[in-house]
Amino acid sequence: MARGLLTFSGSLSRDPAVDAWFDARANEVGSMARRWFARIRECGSDVRELVHDGFPTACVGNAPFAYTNVFNSHVNVGFFHGDALADPGGLLQGSGKFMRHVTLRPGVAADDALLEALIAAAYQDIKARLPVAKWVLALGLDPAAVDPATFQPFTTAQVTAFIETQLERIRQLGHEVQSCLVDLGATAEGVVARQLEAKSFDCVLIGAGLRAPEGLLLFEKLLNLVHERAPRARICFNTSPADSAEAVQRWI
Image 1 (cartoon, one colour):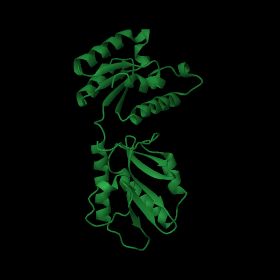
Image 2 (cartoon, helix red, strand yellow; image 1 turned 45 degrees about the horizontal axis):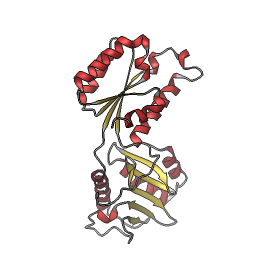
Image 3 (cartoon, helix red, strand yellow; image 1 turned 180 degrees about the horizontal axis):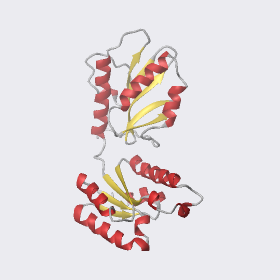
Image 4 (cartoon, one colour; image 1 turned 120 degrees about the vertical axis):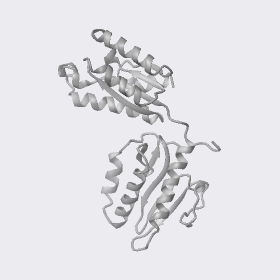
């Protein structure tokens, strides 16, 4: 990279704070901004978001590429690396070192196709700046397959949500994560095998629930399955969902 890459921590696949930001601006300019941020979200499944510096911001991984902001009588659709974007329609404004924006006003016709092209270009530009993402397969015991009394005072749904929150931490490191929760029955091997056949993984995280003494035989079967189907993948173990990100960081 020719320059350091700006990153923001805390982005989510869908941040409730972003929707709340738009809900608080339900006027004409707010609706315009919501429409264009929706278009930014559609760039790809890897787009993440957060409210940064007071306005909705879209990222790939933790690297921002676009935002929208609302003012009294206009909307800005901005680009963090706008200086690098081709702009045949002359829409981009700004004289900063890197950032540029497009100004939209109610009642003033805008060239939607040109702005959509800029958004798509900004998305591709940030992906080109990022290192290639590593793919992590997170194998774990499905909380739904465990006696709920084990989780008291928490519910099965709360435990499942906690696991997903911890996987989000891995995504925030810039990795792609595929979750694979299995039961302790005969179908577990087939479920894992299909995941390993569908994609090449750089790392396989095997959760503590699958390594309990009572599930030793299944753990051995799954470990050998990973060794057979993904021989180049790093294998790591957590002690609980809370240190999953740290386990992955040790190996990729």
